[in-house]
Length: 111
Length: 115
Figure (cartoon, rainbow over the protein chains, first blue to last red):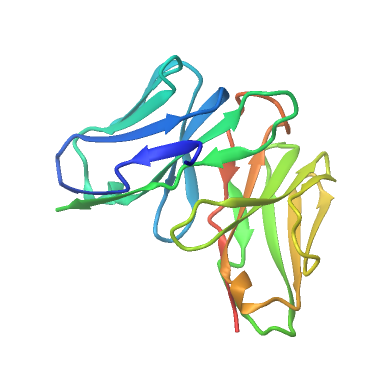
């Protein structure tokens, strides 16, 4: 079992729909990152969370440390939101340096 | 400027060629990373430089040779690669290596094809 699990793996939505992508992890973490990767390959950091909730435009990210779970919500989805969304965590521990990546959620938003 | 710039965007090379990938950032970040990403897989860490010194080598074959000539620039020298090395190579930077809760900034990647 992966230390970071994302669901769903693939998601197709109609433009305007509210979208939720989930991330569950099994390790103690210092921070959780949501990343967006477009087909061209470049990765954009959307959020870094260690508690609570963050909002940026149409994107909202929440984290529940006790339940080891985070969600990424997209309101009023648009075709340009089509991308792979990756959850990444850094293990809490002295000297740990590696991000543990989820396998990604492939989102397609249809016009 | 919050950009990490990678060049070239695409590279096709033969197995006997020598080529280099370049990564540049001007955010004053002192930790720089190379990742390799195969299709539909998450990125895999290759190397970490901290204050221009190699801190982490994730058992990467010697045909990949990293170099950090200054605090803004990170190179990856390639020699005698194999077709299975074809992948997207991503560079990332963070303010300081091992500092908690600092954001990582990624480049657009170099898509490498070895023929």
